[in-house]
Length: 351
Image 1 (cartoon, rainbow, N blue to C red):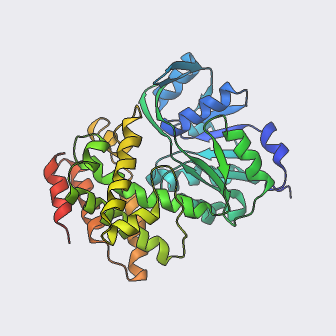
Image 2: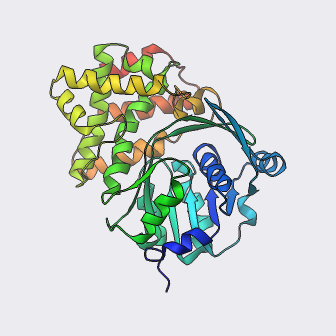
């Protein structure tokens, strides 16, 4: 059996299938197609697929817009023998996506998760760790309409084998994805994906009010302390599970540990880094906020933070703040609650 971990030349000759051509998937697919790779975009939104095939995929950036000719289809006509698959659906859609993809993935193929959350676990359980590549994506994008994506700002892109091997496969994948964002390889990819996951809890909390991320993190000392507690609840779970969290971009686990212990300078530094990061970007509110306020659809919070809570129970770790945040987002999804600063104050009051 051919092994993609040891045959980097295969990656440069195969069709790259991007499953989920919205924000992250769309930007990734457009960049790869623009670089001359054979790319197939797969998305369930018929109007989006139709627009991409008719007019190309337009990516809007702070510096201007570009349109790339792409091939796009809906999942029902996706063929089999897929060798390289970039998965970019919302976390709650991963199980359904795997139902489609597992029988279509080549025996020597690979799935790279470009998603939020802990999806590598689900993917590896479905197709095996050998056919799974972990990835941290920390640059931002929004789907703004059929055939159109907003690139919200730059950020890290890190790849790694689940077993930590510095394989030829991930080295080749890093070169491939370097046209999307500067990409590096790690021997601790779960340390990165978990790090984004725990930091993501803070970003979820900024979506309970109609405000820019930097406005929330600069709101008050009490709000900052709440955000630190929220991150540390998830950090406790990760570390109890044996994960060595890695710093990236605007997140350093050491600052949050120190801040939780009363280090005011560490708390201020952590929040200032986030504020600076978001002030510099076109996208100043989260995808969770956009799902709630603009697209008015169910978010991936239940799948993301719910996965952490599910792991916390057997480890004997309480997550009262995270659980309140999950319930609050559910209320916002169903219209039982509106976005307001009172929601933030309610989170501050949780003990």
